[in-house]
Image 1 (cartoon, rainbow, N blue to C red):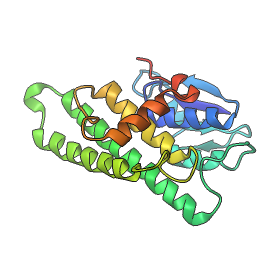
Image 2 (spheres, rainbow, N blue to C red):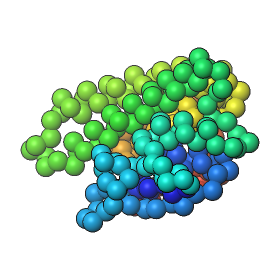
Image 3 (cartoon, one colour):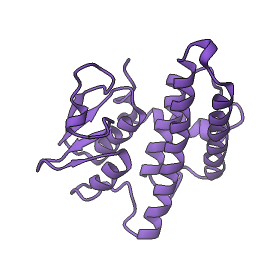
Length: 202
């Protein structure tokens, strides 16, 4: 398999971690979509990463679709439950974490505009989404080691990539002070081998 990637993307990191946790062999192709001459559109007409080219040549994108595809491959570890309703619950938590990340990306891009072009309303709206999303994750972790079930799932990978990306790209934002459960959980995830191996590189 070939993973078309950017080493700073939290969505790419989610898939890299899933592949590592499942013990699947893959080739990492660093192809940042903003770099001139990149070939991302050869794999995804939307020009976004991640995209995954399977061993038979079929291509899958975006990260939730790729994660679903990985569950069809032989592996000792499952990250999405087999039972349909349980799978939906894990995917909803994945969507929550990805949605927080999406809001963070909008916030980041707004701060990169010229100071006189930035819209405080946009930033405030995205911060509100992030606050509510992280509060929901904090509540979900009350008395639990994992977001769903008794072991690591795709929901945990997505949530870990989300909050650690906030540290990476929005270090001025203190999400920890009122969220002890999420803080301890993020620390534990950051120490897992698959997370250590995929720390973003600028």
